[in-house]
Image (tube, rainbow, N blue to C red; front, side, top):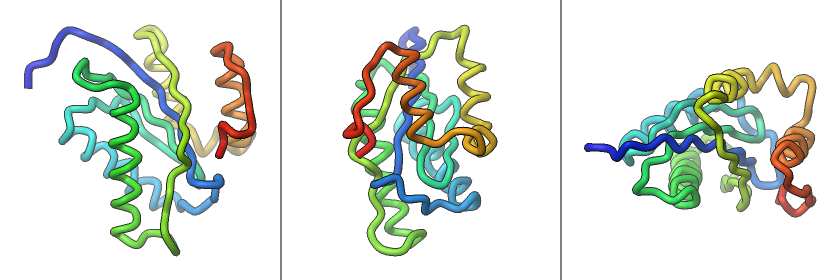
Length: 149
C-alpha cells in the first residue's frame, strides 16, 4: 500500500475495566504481539506497544486514512474480542470505555517509545491513576475521576 507523506504520532493509554489487575507479564507479551499483528494487517503503524497488569500504552504513526478514534477503537475492540476468544482471563473481559490520547512530535518519539518499553519499572514508583494525572497536567487538561471509568 502506498502511503501519503505524513507523520502523525499518537500515544494512547487505556485500562482494563475498573482497572482490574488481571494481566500477567506473559499475557502482556501475547497481547503486545497480537496488537502489533492486528495493527499491521489494518495498515496501522505501531511504533511501540506495552502494558502492565491493568493498562496499556500504544504509540502509532497514524495513517491519513484513519481518525484517531477509529484506530484505537479497532485495536481495543478486536483485542478484547481476541482475549475473550482465547479464554485468557476468568469471566468476560472488557477494556475501560475511555482512553487518553496525546500527540507526539518526531523529536519526542524515542523518549515516548522508551517510556512505553519500561512500563513495569515505571509502575513500581507510580500508580496508573497518578500516571494519567501527570499526563493530563503536562498537556493542560483537567483530571476527573470519571476519566478512569
